Length: 433
Image (cartoon, rainbow, N blue to C red; front, side, top):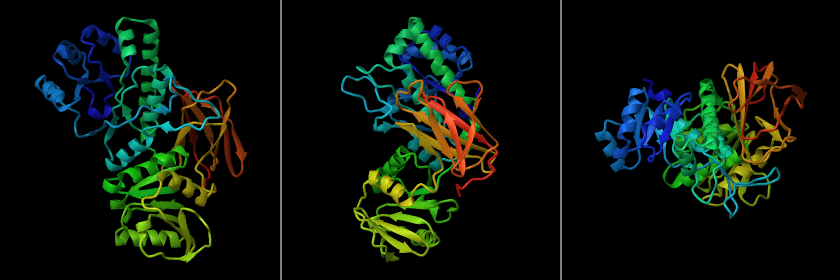
């Protein structure tokens, strides 16, 4: 019986009360069924147990109580289950068709920031995301399922795969198109399961976001994470309770916009960071305005010179998270970019690395329609021994040509329909720190 950390979950459709439908799972990676219990599922549960599947109760309190009477427990404490995930994608037009283009500037819905925050708050635990496909009149395409899997796997989580009603019905009657979609979904899930080491890599980022992400700071703090990610700015998360003793090595900018002034130990540490050359962005409640005015006429922040660095105090309370993400990018500049992306739009990226420099990983999730001649370029500041491209579902990677450029390395990528993972081996030099 697999352990909870190795469970690969599928939300079993409540309408599937025929045990023979378990045959759909043969040859797939799924080994755990998340069930919203009703009595008609008893034959399925019995057959699934015989076949070695783990069973987990989900749903409301009444559903879980009924499942408990059938011997099915809720997720254990070693799992973090998040029920507030969104369906990854971009805003849809009024007719419900999902669309975007290579020159669009859409609003992207992603669970990347949510997963990263959960993993910081619950280190060592497996994070499950529970979200469902959109209902009618939207048609859920295969590409949308693959994007949902990639959006979860890229940031180290597991989606409790949930099928829309049309796909459920098609699979139940053996429709060939539905079966092909199901096979592709299973292959995408298996792809991330074959790369468990990727989840243990440490996120790269010269921008640190410090907050308790709760109470009056929940909306602002979480939206800052969300919107910084949308700008493809590599960031790291520091909970305020631990920030006073955490290492600030490698950071070039820190954001602290919680309501109220920070505790004295944290305040002193942040001031030292700025004095030593960092950019410190703080909220209006920061307190005394240390440093000297720079004379910069900025509409949203009072930028002050502090030692070798800068202190930027927000003028509005609470500040606009969108503008925080924009302003920190403008004030910091592009000198310390962890990666730069060209000829890509409507995408999110995640950069991570092994602490010993043996492997860097750049992952891209595309939300736009890509065309056969859409060749993208990724520039990274390091020099490497080799580079390889992983496509979603691929068994083996393809080598990538590395072109020295601007003190770093440019990589030419083929079209990225949904996902690309670039492994960079044996870093020889970088300027992330």
